[in-house]
Image 1 (cartoon, one colour):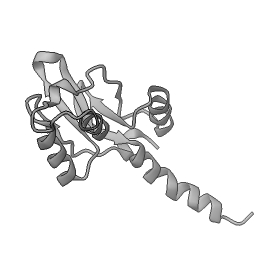
Image 2: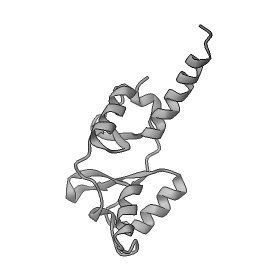
Image 3: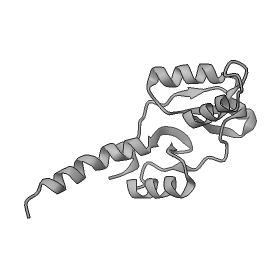
Length: 133
């Protein structure tokens, strides 16, 4: 199975000036754990995750005063839609992150998360376990 089969194609995109509270509200409303941050002044595409917001709040920073650009990961590892789910899972495990922005032709085409991969693998594993020997 390929990344294109598992990825979410509806991607939440925010700007660098969004506050963390605004980002959290948008992520919560969409029920996603990450947002693509489009910031042409800082190199283009980054990612803001729920963990980034949690770390900021845990440090006592105000989600109303902190902006996405200060907490965005900009050294992003991107996936291709033609990667296998195994490649994506291995990349996430090696890098210690749970989301990959999927680029197609240099443009964001989706996001694949650990949860997306599990959703795809779980039914396959269940069917295999149910097949009599």
